[in-house]
Length: 342
Length: 295
Image (tube, rainbow over all chains, first blue to last red; front, side):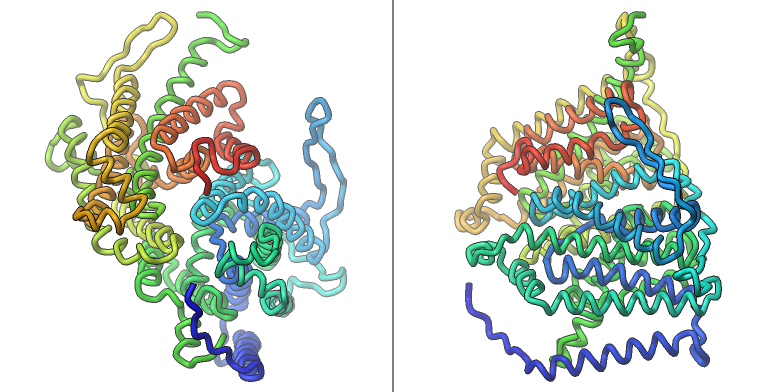
């Protein structure tokens, strides 16, 4: 390997641009629903959930170099679990003890924070299983394995009783946050979603800039070398995968409560493709890129909602253009032009 | 009629036949993917869309030009293969020096465009394509009825698969191909036009997909989304078999088709997912895949 001439910007300068960009993002989130912008809060919440989903996905590809083509399974299944917990509560699942028997845990409909927690936990467990299978192969196979596992989870969602098949779980109640704050009020719900998003965003920022994040980047750049330095790269990859899956689950669960719907479209392979596109448009491996990308794609979908198949075609064209001409994405390009890190 | 394991034999053999048919398509498609991956180092996500284009090419040739099944079986792969070559020249050739992932993303984007465009033009419902007259009817084998067309699909798939294997593994041209897969720079130094070989390889892989599409047209309805669901299963097949060996791709394709067919008889709820479950088990036991030479 030729040693590359990398100029490391002074820590202070790097931090200040990130702080400014973060302040801009918060300002947009506060001003968004107010006049003169008066953006529809439900659209904003949708965009925020997808932004979090894309940030979680970016943690894996942007910093770990692992392309998962099946992240919809975490997003979609977490949203099913959260929706079910918030609407019905009672959990029942079959266990093999010589014969299949159903274990039933009777629960009342849960408060939204517990429902979201449940969905997120489920995505984390699913992440452990899917991750430990997928990291057994590298590169292109990793992408194919995650895609195949996600398709399997899609079929499970299609066949399971509680998911409601083609109908999904509709009219999920938003409920009372901590049993106190009524989230039926859209602005209260919006503030809650913003809080979840900002907390998760800061957590991801912390992970990226931790020693763990540095090892992850080292693995992305040169895995054999990281191994020779004594790092157990599989463990790092698995932990990154599980964190990414869990956060993707948090996004899906929050979306189910905020929008009041968990449906098959959230677990389909198209959704896995969409989150890749969002991250790619915004900029792989940038902190703010996935947020910008998600906002752009959600805005495009809302604008083109009556145009049917054109949405798919435009998404495809965006993929092709990004890969051929614009691999750094919006934020990556901006950062490169301004010689800063975003 | 007799019973095997408590299952009526007609149901068992019927599903075995369906499994063999599906296995033919798995084998043809995973073979194309493996050949393309070997030369281009790109996983061709457009493969499903190209399979669908093959079926549509046959349908449109009949609809607009009154060209029947037999000429379409040759023409459709040629047309779609030519489109594939154009795709390689226009888009893919710029990606060979980049990370594999970009090839996957680009071909995924192309698949979205093609599928979206066909859906826009033809809608989502399937269009029927008639079985050619010479292959209508069925044979009574005593224990089951074997429709002639299905027998033809299985036979021709086996022949095409082994012909491909023979060309790649046993001919001069194939040896160039394998050498260029191992070390393109060195092969180029021997005066062989490697970029052209890459281009033609892609065209050939795409033509195989289109050929499978024409074979599938009379069995399934011709519809824009017929490829996208199939390609994900084929990816799982490729993970199970590993892309190192052509024979491996063929054996895995047919084998998994049969297993899927049998699952439909014994445990129908799992028939959609059995291949993915097998993939998970194979990853646990033999991470490199059944015929793989390491990831």
